Image (cartoon, rainbow, N blue to C red):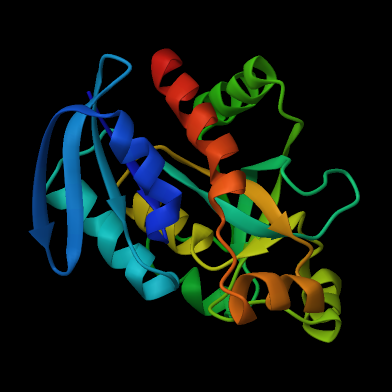
Length: 227
């Protein structure tokens, strides 16, 4: 069994890559793929780049070139709910686009307007969070190509699809994984509140996200043991 592990930014996968043993690296279509062993399992770890197009193309490479059997996307997101806070985790039970015409997207495989995390992987993620002492929910993740960093945009997305968090890759990952019949789950640690303060911290000041992805990295490592 080969498990694919993705992030959108280098910080989101660097800590995982550092844990791999028996590593080989290969660059393909602008993405570096790290093949190795983690917790005794064969994995391929990569940084896709931000946004839906980068995510989708990288998933297809993982499926076609590396023949992955399962897929975990690990990263950060903007919090959209009072159920969790900064540093807590949202596991994608439901994942959808907030900036797409869903009825048109659903006219091609996998013919869905929203996507659902593989139940076994969702439970593995929640169990890993519990083992790490991290508060987590199985929730709804909304995906779009625009960084959400103002209250007005946040309100529009809240009114449209009522997500628990917002990010830029999850639905594309889920859509292409579904098209290939690969079980997947999206795992997000909350880094900000998807408002003006989040934009200031993550965009203007280019704040290091290491403290947030450390949480997700430990959870993914524990997940690998049980999948």
